[in-house]
Image 1: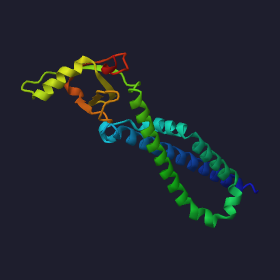
Image 2: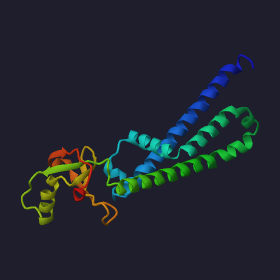
Image 3: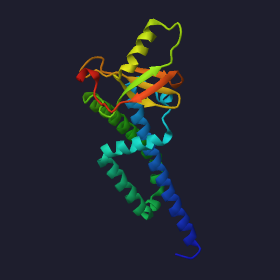
Length: 212
């Protein structure tokens, strides 16, 4: 190899590595997004309403690849084979280029399917064990004159500490009341504007009131 071709080879290797890293990050993000979409869909909530920070999707994605570790290992092995087999692939560049796009699209479809499956499995496992990771909370709402009877009933029930904390963002508090073994199988979530919450107490209790 001539001295003039050495820098070109180095740049090419760096670009190949950067492409693989970017592709892997995109796959992890897609798996995490699919996981979150399926998991929170069981609570009848869309991701836009939850305002989940984007970096959380990478965490969810790692959960997905952890549960599908054999497929993740297969992806790693294929990636290493591509890197080590670069000289061979260059010699057959005509069919390699033709296969790149279908293979990449297939990868994204696969990780989306993995994320949906893991999100469904995690929800079912948590529901069957009475959501052990979600604490009970007591919520006090600000009084509003002339409230409807249903709102008065809800405002009276929230401080009792039987609702579970699903998620909180800067504008909304999502709570639900779980009933183990009871229907419906999907919890009914209450979205409370943070501006209407006077006080919130997170309790060190992770079982439904009906179990006590």
